[in-house]
Length: 199
Image 1 (tube, one colour):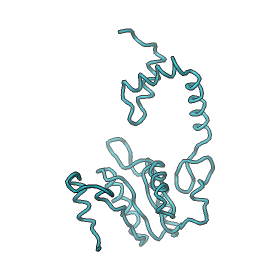
Image 2: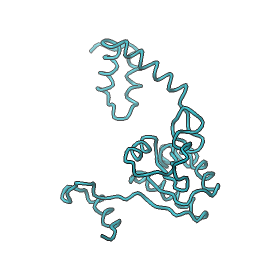
Image 3: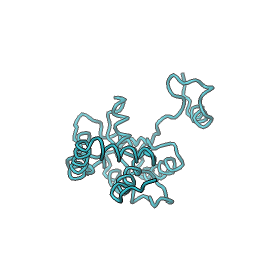
Image 4: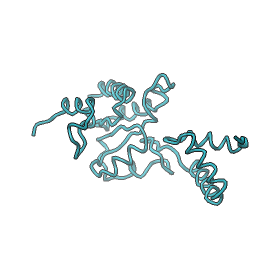
């Protein structure tokens, strides 16, 4: 098998760092961009460089934006007393698409994971503590993932909120709309049973 040039190998290696991209997919993408669509590759490189130069973290919620304060934090119609804590900007987009939440957000930079070197400082918890110290938050809604790390992050935040007397809630977990009980895994079913409410 012919060896690829160091530049191509480096491009493949960089593409493999993207979520959901395996070795073969990265190889196909790299070769397609270089061989069949060099104009698209140039546009992609330019768009990536522009985004790197312009995009920053919102000074209030840590979401990605192109100004000091993002559109959501600047919106006077949103309920600033409700603060939904999520792990990434992708989570904000998902909740916003539901149209069910009109409060504010705080975007962590991931979740606590000591094995990966991600402690409270690395994911932005000191900035969350500053938000809580301001005394404007009445309810903290935890929307971290249901992984071990997500649960540990949620518990850490609960302990941060306790001295402030802030009401803390957690997104409901359970059976998806239209789901059948026989197809639901035992952990999801357990969460659904424990989180049941009056009908």
